[in-house]
Amino acid sequence: MTRVPLLQNRYVRIGLVALVLLFLLLVLLAPATGQKTSGSTYNRAPEGYLGWYAYMEAQGTPVQRWRRPLDTLLEQPRVEAPQTLIRIYPGLVNQFQAWDRNWLEGWLADGNTFIALGLDAPIRDAPFTSRLTSDFGDVMVKTRRREEVPVNSDRHLLGDEHGAVVWENDDAASGRFIVALTPHLAANAYLDEPGNLAFLADLATQAGGPIWVDEYLHGFKAADVIVEETVNSWGAYLARTPVKIALIQLAIVLSIFLLAQNRRLGNLTPIKAPKIDNSKAYIEALAAVLHKAESTPFLVETITKAERSRLQTALGFHQANIDDSTLQDAWTEQTGQSHQALTPLLQPPQVPQKRADATLKAWLEKLQRLRQTPIR
Image 1: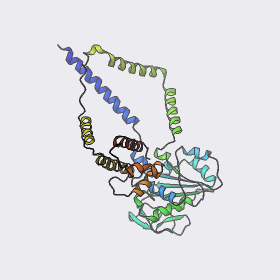
Image 2: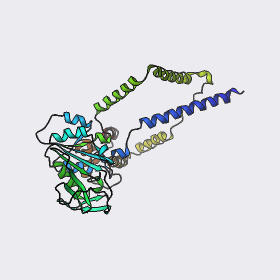
Image 3: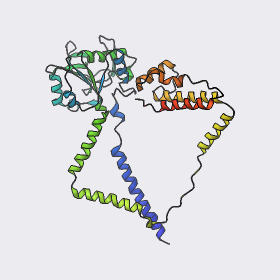
Image 4: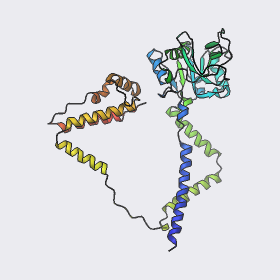
């Protein structure tokens, strides 16, 4: 009579241990997102740079995304024109966190340009929101930090009487080393400020060569890099782990497995009859009514509206009222496919009554392929 409570307590303890282990695994394996993607050209949020990336493409000077460790950039075949590398930090960092001096000296020694956005500096007696004058119009910045660089100096690229917000560091031997105090110099939040976009574009294009944006900094990595880093991390872990500890871990895993398979802890749980899916039954009944009533045009119109709303949300427009041309342009930009791929959605078929089922089925298959198209 007392065995059932003991078994129940044992199950509770096993369940609690399993939940704790699951929580630890989720914490350790959860992807690093959120703040880390601030400043990324893949990010369409206000702190992202997707708008500036599109602006550069429209200007005919596309930006290339670098998704590997920076030291491998030096191993690339050299080009005739100097290259430009831009690092947009997720938050303010000091100069010891911002760059590897050994790597940077090699990059600048080849005559290349390095632009760092988001360096920390002292707070001055300056307004938080300022419109700074540049050759490309006013540049809006929201920071009270300034660097002590004389206004009349060639190194002073953007600032006011309180100091510089963007300046050229004089540490570079042959290349150019440009630093900005704000990481949001040309972020999506300033798309309505043409001076911000044009100012950063001018800094990036002055060298005349390829322009790289470090996306590895924001956690975006090439597929082969992910595989290599995963293998190296597991290999290093196994190399450092003594055999005794590895055997203990294996014994713990086997014990948990055997305990889970031990049926003597209690009676077998009877198989319950599957529950009826009310949603599925309702959909099937509604489909039968619409088919019998020959309401195919109504069905096509309803599905078209729903699929268009879903696609707009996936492309970042949500419930905005946009025309077909804008939707096609966004589709092409984010999927790389042509405008014609959206024809089944934008121009739904006129379903004849004689072959309604076949026409509707073919149309739905095309919509299904649209759903499966990956959107960046």
